[in-house]
Every structure is written in structure tokens, then in C-alpha cells.
Image 1 (cartoon, helix red, strand yellow):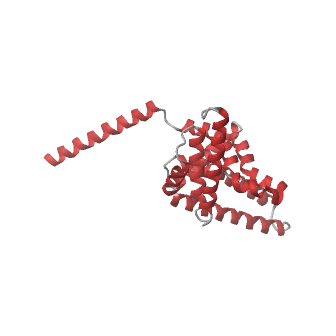
Image 2 (cartoon, rainbow, N blue to C red; image 1 turned 30 degrees about the vertical axis):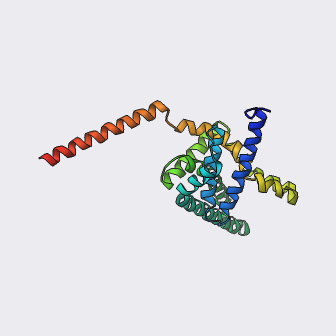
Image 3 (cartoon, rainbow, N blue to C red; image 1 turned 90 degrees about the vertical axis):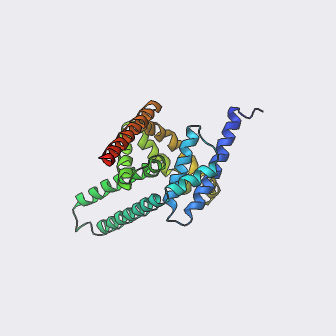
Length: 231
């Protein structure tokens, strides 16, 4: 059997997803590092989808280290906002006679926005160097654009897939979820958002042009400093 046959490549992808899932779960154990773990997972998944994968563990821990702080802040922030929305929902539902129905509608709208951002925030963090605010804005922009192309809707369904499997499969589904709970739906999600990422990425020609412009700008600044030093 040829090593580069479609079947062998399929088996290789399955093995990569198993390894990646184990690393993701392992780095989620401290809880606060879950955001960085998911970011690293999406970084590797994008490389797999683009056929750029090398050593899974090396790429994972590189991305984990690079995005650790932002991953922690984003994860804690999202958990905090989610908990706040849940408490507001409990208060509104238990005191529905004291609050107008419009408040509940606004709460659902806010929860939907947070959910849309959550779909993209860690994939975006894995691919782009940005501030936390910039990452959130870009995530929301991708989510809205994805709705137009149905990518976000499919992304949201895949995001919930492990919970649906657990709900209907019960304890029998635990072994499968332990091995593939994050990476299998994540792999198909990466196939969806990879197209969006390319719309935000520069072509090789544009990258070369930007590098040349930056080089010329540095040369001009150096000349200006030299003239000032001479005078």
C-alpha cells in the first residue's frame, strides 16, 4: 500500500486529530489556560486543512506559548460575561412580572452576539497578531460576514456537536468524545473559516510590496536621523 495514497493520508489525519485532541485536553486541565489551548488547537487545525502540517506537538506548543496571555484574558472574559448573562437570565425569568419582556429579548440578543464572537475568537487569535479589542472586533466581523455565506451557521452547529453527542449518547459517547471531542468538529470548522481567513490575508505579492515599503521607510528615517546628527 502506497504511503501517499488517499487512505493512508486519511489515517494520518485521524492520528493527527487524536494527538491534537489529547494535547488540547491536557492543556485545558488548569482551566484558565483553556483559551490558549483552544487557540493552539485551531492554529494546528488550520495548518492541517491547508496541508501545511509538520510536527503536531511542536506547532501546538509554539502557538500555545505565543498566545498564552491573550488566550487567558479572552477565556476568563468570555466565561465572566457568560456567567453574568446567565445570572441576568435567571433573575428575569424568576421575576418576569416585574420586568418588561423587552429586557429578555435584549438579553437573548446580547447572548447571541457573545456566541457569534466565541465561534471565531480563538481561531482569529491563532492566525493574527492583534490586540484583544482588535481580535474581538475581527471575530465579530467574520461572524457577521459568515452568516451571509452560511459559514457561521454551520460553524455554530459544529461548535455544539460534541454537546449534542453527549446529550443523546450519554456515557457511551464518552470514549469517542475523549478522543475526538474538540478536533473532529474543529477540523470541519477550520475548513469553513479557512476561506474567511484568506479574505483577510495578503497575497505573496502584497506581502512583498509591504516589506519593500517598510524597508524604504526605514531607509528614509535613517537618512533623516543622519542629517539631524550632522547638523
